Image (cartoon, rainbow, N blue to C red; front, side, top):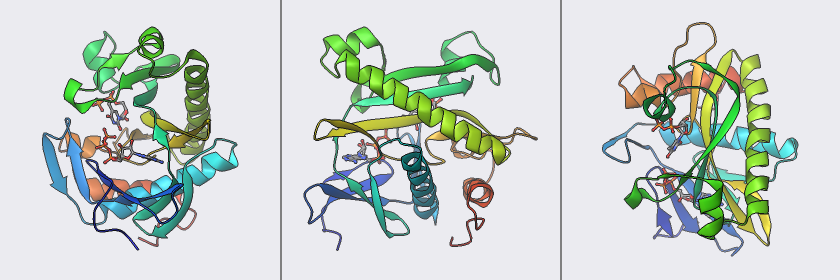
Length: 240
Ligand code: ATP
Ligand code: TYD
């Protein structure tokens, strides 16, 4: 049973306490936001589509030896996860230049990077999630250097697994954001891996299948999200 009051209500998910103190209940809502909440809408089925994608990728990554917070699904939009002390970092991996990278640096959108790049933002909405570096992360005691190294290695391994998989599905994994947390001294991949947190381009046409469809009014975002599930799930996403 889901308690009445969430422990935490984020922009797209609500997090509830569970009867088991080591677990949390995460409900993927139909809210969609962009530009730090300035743009906000609701779309039927969006929560289920992202929860389904997240379940699929968390299971895939576990099978590849990456510890994740995923425990089980309680409903199509509700995931039971291991309760983590979240590390307040947004760990972004980029394979192709897009989004903020092309605004901040002299590189054209679509440029294939020489190698995958990890960039890290400090997760703090009030400060506009500023980019941070290894020295600051250590000196501000956000994470010790050895654990940061581990986080980056995990992020790059996630990239290897996901890039290969998407390529086989005819999709280019442009970039994505991960969040990590700790439980009993061990680092786990937390939060979500969904169409909200990745940039995905069709290999043939370059069409976006991700939140950019919503950010930049490129078409029907739910159709785009369904297209991803159709390509990645063995049953073509029929349960939606
Ligand atoms: P953003 O959209 O920038 O990620 P948000 O806080 O609004 O920020 P939501 O996804 O709506 O994001 O909220 C989910 C919250 O739950 C996030 O703060 C995330 O860090 C946290 N969270 C995710 N997984 C876990 C976990 N396993 N244990 C504890 N907290 C978690
Ligand atoms: P980025 O290009 O830095 O930001 P924006 O999407 O605002 O231009 O985003 C890189 C990738 O990380 C992209 O796939 C979206 C994802 N991301 C999130 O999911 N949440 C975030 O808060 C940020 C900054 C990025």
